Amino acid sequence: MASTEQTNSEVGQDGGHASGVFPPFDPSTFGSQLLWLAIIFGALYLLMSKIGLPQVEGILAARKAAHEGDLAEAARLRSETEEAIASFEKALADAHAHAEEIGNSTRDKLNAEIITKRKAFDAEITANLDAEERTIAEAKVKAMKNVGEIAAESTISIIQHLTGTAPSVAEATAAVSHVANA
Amino acid sequence: MAAEGEGAIDPIHQFVIEPAFHLGGLTVTNSAAFMIAILVIATLVMIVGTSQKALVPNRIQSLGELAYEFVANTVRGSAGHEGMRFFPLVFSLFMFVLIANLIGLIPYTFSVTSHIIVTFALAALVILTVIVYGFYKNGFHFLNLFVPSGVSPVLLPLLVLIEVISFVSRPISLSVRLFANMLAGHITLNVFGGFVAMLLASGTWAVILSPLPFAMTVALSALELLVAFLQAYVFAILTCVYLNDAIHPGH
View 1 (cartoon, each protein chain N blue to C red):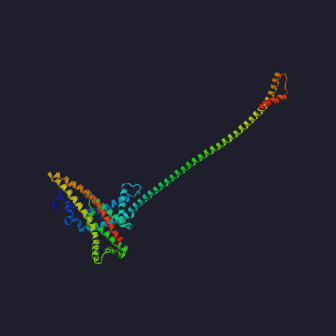
View 2 (cartoon, each protein chain N blue to C red):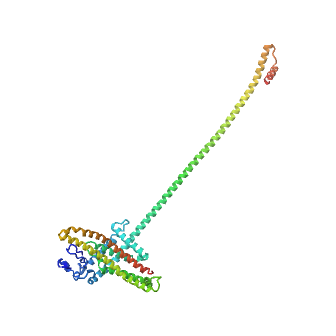
View 3 (spheres, chains in turn brown, orange):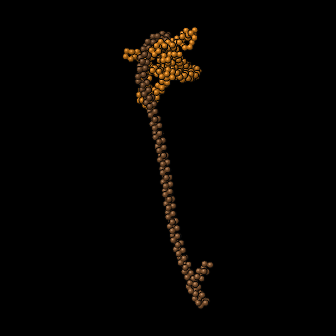
């Protein structure tokens, strides 16, 4: 290049460039590059295959396992929750049914009691009424008998006042009963 | 090393291999130094960054997991579950090429993958793996790879020839694709960056034009970032496709 003279001495020291060979095609550097490449790439391969990649693989596997474990735990907790909800609802339904049962049985019992008590009252009242009716009937019969006697006595006294003669009790009684039966 | 700001455009200078430092009696070139950097970065991301093994990853661990899953999905998608035995190889290739390409985007750095010998060595490794594993697993049935089924016997020799040429050209296309992309991208970036420096240094009215190549450099940097990732991905997925041929050689 024309500028080689103007540039500083650094360029002049480069044997490879000064020789006019395009550096990537300069065979004199091939040996050392190949040697270094073999060393470095060999070391890189060993480090990656023995340490680096297994390490990352382990991390990824551990993360995957942790994720799957978390998901399984979440699923387990969810099914537990669902079980708890189901058992709660069952208990609630049982309690409802039980309460209804108690209500029904109590009502039935009370109804039955009321019915028996009313029957007992009815029977008592009926019995009392019968007794009263009998008493009344007896009193009436007695009263009616007294009425006959009073009527006969009144008849005797009325007739005595009118006629001056007193009819016999039998006659008066017959006359009264004759009139009462007419 | 990039030669921007030297006053003259020398886009080739960045590819020169020169001694970077001395380690004991060993001379470490810039290429070697950046390869070491690749190894260190890959180790930091994939081993140190993931060493906490956190269930909820931090940023670096996330990056490592992302790289792992990305390459693993690529291998599974292209070569099936049997291809996972080559996962460490494909992963190492992908990380090496990706980190090399990304480092190269930083100004004044060196792109390891801009040298054909490096990309060709990686491609040759892939093809050799394909050939060795292909024969090991399938025996001579591996050669069925070159014999398309259901073809008339008249055309068969021609097609076998084409298949052989296509197979032989694989390491070349695999290596040249990566090398040429990196080389061309870096030269283009350097040329436009050099324009900025030249226009600014001209001291005349041309200085006002300097934002134009600068905007171009910015846009190209974004493009090169895409190319850096894409080429690493292409290298990895083609490796998977070729390995799939070794695993399932029937057409």
